[in-house]
Image 1 (cartoon, helix red, strand yellow):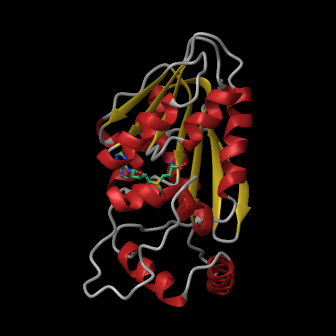
Image 2 (cartoon, protein in one colour; image 1 turned 90 degrees about the vertical axis):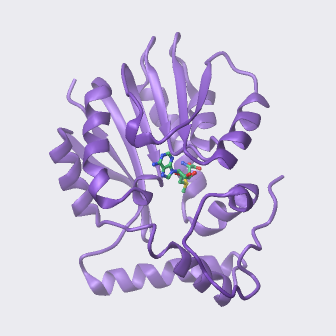
Image 3 (cartoon, helix red, strand yellow; image 1 turned 180 degrees about the vertical axis):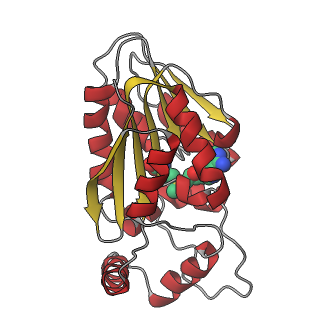
Length: 244
Ligand SMILES: C[S@@+](CC[C@H](N)C(=O)[O-])C[C@H]1O[C@@H](n2cnc3c(N)ncnc32)[C@H](O)[C@@H]1O
């Protein structure tokens, strides 16, 4: 059972920038579930995508794995033999809990949990790479380079799953989806104070792109195909393919 997220329920004097520290790691499953519309659908469908894309004797990368939810979903669905999942995060608090989480379930496919910065991680022999709500935390200037390295590390026919919070070029639609996301958080028990304190902490560290910007960047990185396969309000997930 995950602890309930009450981190921002009382007024905080000096709101600093957001970090994935011990306190966040402790409540993370509850926080992401109550903040990201469609999160559990995306997690279980990452498993379905893995069934389709992961080939025998290849590697799957879960970049910015937090507690390993996508890794576990992939591992549960894997049919292919001789595979390895590499789960990476640069937050020591997340990695420590992720290791415990993964070890709590037994399965045939090995998982290597690595504490590292995904910007410097070698990627090779990959049939699938997952960036589930992680790219948005990288500085915009670092995003293309990472996608290029992912493209190069993927085998032909491999897939990248890229889930993000989106901004919108159409301001009316942007405002509607922003407000619906706000309603979603209210309906999940977050107060106005919690919502606004969390928003200001994330403001400088989570810079969102539009779906169009993502698609253009994926193309620039080399991906021959990309499309949105899931969206709920201003959150969604793209799949990008390296030609076979
Ligand atoms: C919103 S969480 C991802 C959620 C997770 N993928 C899931 O499906 O539950 C973003 C994660 O990315 C990690 N992260 C951010 N920048 C990173 C970097 N440069 N290298 C490695 N991990 C990073 C954070 O520590 C955090 O755990």
